[in-house]
Image 1 (cartoon, rainbow, N blue to C red):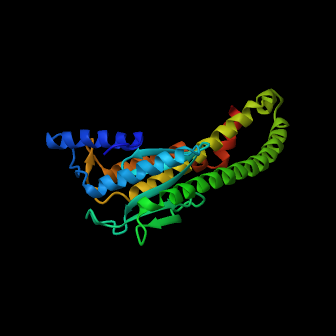
Image 2: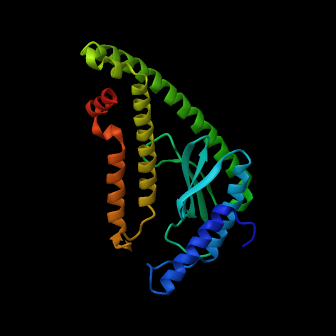
Image 3: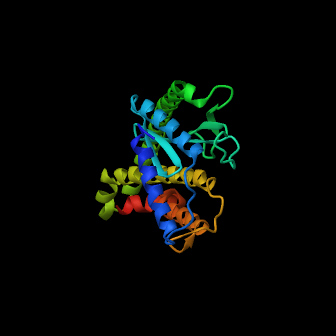
Length: 249
């Protein structure tokens, strides 16, 4: 396959290494790529190159997952057989963009291999991706602005009340860095939301949770990832602990 996008080439290299480990009895079973896989790779390469012209950057947490990043905002998509269990080379494909504005994965836009092949709809698909990217960035900017404006008013009011509690700690409590600590925790929360969204999408790709990686099953790894995400997310700790940290900053 020629003219592969760097991300698709990276997948091919990582897959070849995994296959080599499997062939030498040192890794889990890995399916070999077939003509259906190669067709998907060609499609994605063309789509990735097309959207990059508009500043939308393809990314991946690991094959076959891929997503798009625009102005620091991320949203997910997928390409696969309409019949998800088919590996027939002539199986019809489906390209989906998931709605980035809801917690549970929901279809935002989709294109099917029928009656027009996806190869003939790449400009349409790329335009759809760019449109979603711009809409996501605009919506999240507005959401962040409204949320931060409201939180700023509440925090400033809270700091004023806290300053009156004890003279010996008033300097620390009125320090503007305490608000920076709150912003940092808000950013950690949004990153945790992103990871949870990714884990939900990733779980749909797991057909056998008992497969082991580094001595642990995929189900165990998913449980570990969920626990780590909760530990990383300040919101899980509750408002009392969050503001206690702000005051102690």
